[in-house]
Image 1: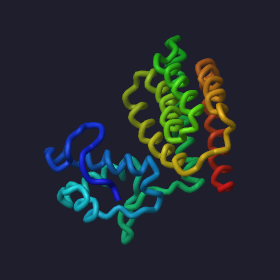
Image 2 (image 1 turned 60 degrees about the horizontal axis):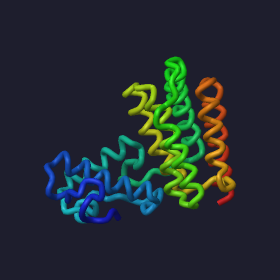
Image 3 (image 1 turned 90 degrees about the horizontal axis):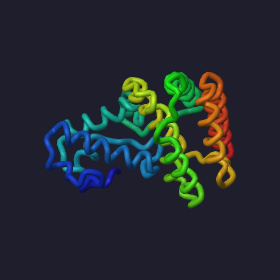
Image 4 (image 1 turned 120 degrees about the horizontal axis):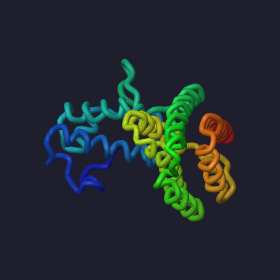
Length: 223
């Protein structure tokens, strides 16, 4: 179950914060455990255990879990309760299709403005460093930043908000499935992808996400 105590990012103990903020801190802690792989897909998340672990009311625990349900990192099912989400292949394809629609539109806006996303080159450099170190969690974080740099540059809050929800689901999938990439190949692929997407988003984004979907499915089968 999620670890009790201080939130690493805020330094605030959950029990000392007012109600809504406490639920946010609990949700952040559980989310971190899910995306790190500490809580595997299918793991049950019981209100009473979250409540006891963090020293908060069951109502606060319920609110925190509801936030994660809205992000689709956990699922709530009748008679089964709340569990860490497990995306099957069909669900993965659906998520990638929606990512494709959002990312294509975001990059189209960026292309039409004639700008290069200000954060994308730094994100690519971080990806290269993470790959070189062999640190898969760091590689995942850097990989996400590359795509988010493209989307954020569109300066569309609604597109960014929806895209970040889907990015969390993809991070969860990739935490547990490592596609077969040669060292450094992910960085090479994404440098080429960024340049292609900024020239022709309608084709480049779809081709890239279809390729990554196939790599993930193949990685699952190899496991």
